[in-house]
Length: 217
Image (cartoon, rainbow, N blue to C red):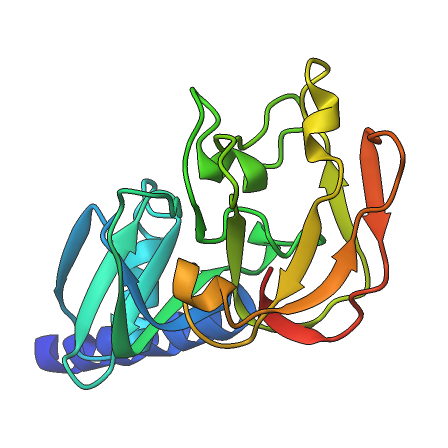
């Protein structure tokens, strides 16, 4: 009788985790692993990995590698300069379906050519309009977001985050790519889709001329 109860409980657990995987979590990225996990270990299935996150109040999302049967738990998804984000073919990262509703760039991996003061690259995708990513002022400066998937872009909003020195953004360009990483090498292979020609800077730019499938902006 005891053995029968054990088997039934196991089947119920796996069935419940499959349901959770399909209804609550969705794929966020693939073939990459962030070093920001707080726990990891061997789990026999992706569903089991997802379930271990579901029952852990600290857990926000998971990454799972089927071949290695390794499960990684995250309490936040925060990609930024200085944090390891490595290519790992076969890795799939899953987040709650409501984590990214309208802003597909929110909390996605970013990088920039330089950093000025507290204006870290992550501030460009943290959802706040009261602060901004800032670079220095050399001849070539860039900021890049990896959207972790190919998207058909309908509109790109650029918020000019500082009331002081707002004109520094005048003449900026938007460039797109669907290959590579957020590096200077990728920048040199990008396609220009927008160049600012406004005589003065704007507080908000609504750019609709980049309606094409791309992964990097």
